[in-house]
Length: 314
Image (cartoon, rainbow, N blue to C red; front, top):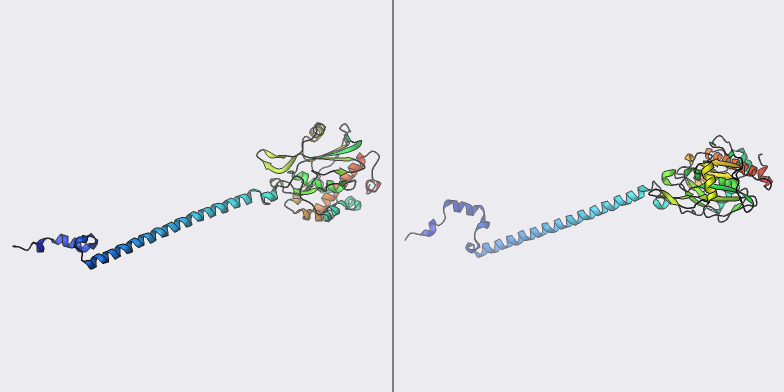
């Protein structure tokens, strides 16, 4: 009887079997081969699990990196959207932040001789006399009306000279606070008259800050509303421009006396340090502006007026 076992595999099958031993049926493996195969399968499975774990770690790391990048971009966007000062920096409280008493004292005590000596070459706007048709009084006293807006850089510049001038005739309680014009509108350090009460034996000072420096979709947040009489004067004489000053109907000023540009992005203390110093252009502009305001107030007062102020430099 022929031995069929010697002819059960042809050359092709033998070649295929030697090429890939994983194709050999387990039933025909020896015990040692079977254990080796099981070890190889376990190693293979362990390698697969290790690779899957690495992939999961890389995936989580990638997600974490994306999250960090998004957070960084948001922070940069928020920090940059205000134009420099931080939104908390960019938006002043309507009544401002407290100003050191020493700084206010310095501003209020600039000698009249210093104001009178200030070069006026930097003044670009003059106060105009009027017929008195718009004369306004309050509690039997002439009224000095100021209409401004906290976002307005021109108003920010003018308030420095106005505070120096007003300090010659009366006092504020509480004192004005420190603010700045809107960042996109010059970012000019200044003080605000909002929330203050001015007391003088000579006249009534009425400040109206129409808007804050807080932006909205259509402009700025409303703050104070002029009375009908104030509004009519502001519109008929000032054309609704900021800043606007009416001196008891005897004189008016539309716009600031000098440019706000030299004040842009300065610290409040940097501007305050130059008031009373006529050797700097900024200091000379504020001092000269204050002197012109003092002279106008004095000429608008019919009888009762402080001689030490109104006679100085006349």
